[in-house]
Length: 320
Image 1: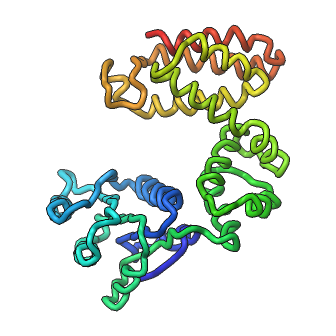
Image 2: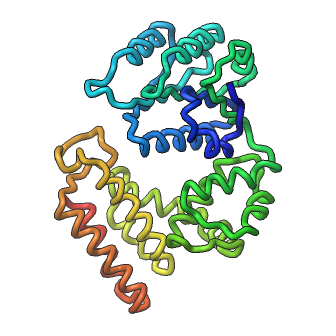
Image 3: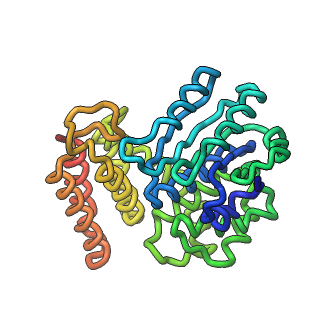
C-alpha cells in the first residue's frame, strides 16, 4: 500500500503494480479532478470504463462484486469507478476494499472514491496490500499548490508562465474550485501553446470572470432551448464583440461535445442526451463554417461581420 498526493499520480500510475486506487479526503473538487485523470488515463490504455457506480447499502455492495466477477463478452480490460457513500459503515468499507484487493488483476482495475476522513483506510496497511494506491485528496495547503498546478496545467495542456504559479498561490484561499475554474477560463480564452502570464490572469480575473459565466450560461441555454429568450441571448452576445475569441471557443467546446456524442446522429428525440436538439451532420457542418468565418473575420477584417455572423449562428443553433 502506498499513500501519495494527487500531483504524484503521474509517477505511480504507470506501474502495473497498483491495481486498486482509493481517493479519499475532504476536498470534493480535488477528488473529482483526480478521478477524471485516472479515468482518462485508463481510457487511453484501452480499458472499458464503468463509471457512475455507487455503493449506498450492503446489497448494492454485493451486486457490484458480482459485476466484477462477470467478464466482458470479449474479455476487454475493464476499469470500475465507484463512489462510496460517506455514511457507509466503516466495517463494510473495510470488507469491500479487502475484497476488491483480491479481485483486481491486470485486466481489472478499480477506483474507489469517498469524501471522507482517510484515517480508517490508512489502518489497512497492516494487511500488506501491495497493489493499493491511496491518494490523499484533503484540502491542498499553500506549500503544495505549485506542484499540483504544474501537474494540472500539464495534463490539461495549459502553458503557464513560471511566475504564474507563485501568483496563483497568492490568490489561493484554500478554494481549489476557484483556481480550477480560472484555469479553464484561460484555456478557452487563449489558443494552444500560448504562454499565459500574470497580466492575462488579471485581465480575466478582474474584468471578464463574472461575464464569462454569464456568457457560458447563455450559450448553454441556447444549445438546450432551456429558460431562454432568443432575442435576449442575441442582445447579450452582441455585447461580446471585443471578446469574440472567447465566445468562439466556448461554442467550439459545445460542438466538440456534440460530435463526441454519437447518439445525436442516431436518435432525433432523446431527452437523456446533453443537447436535446436535432443535430445532423449538415447542421454541425454549417455551424462549424460560421465559426470558421468568424475566426477569419477577426483575423483579417477586425471583426466587422461579428453581428451578422452571430445572428446567423444563433438562428442556426436555435431552429431545427
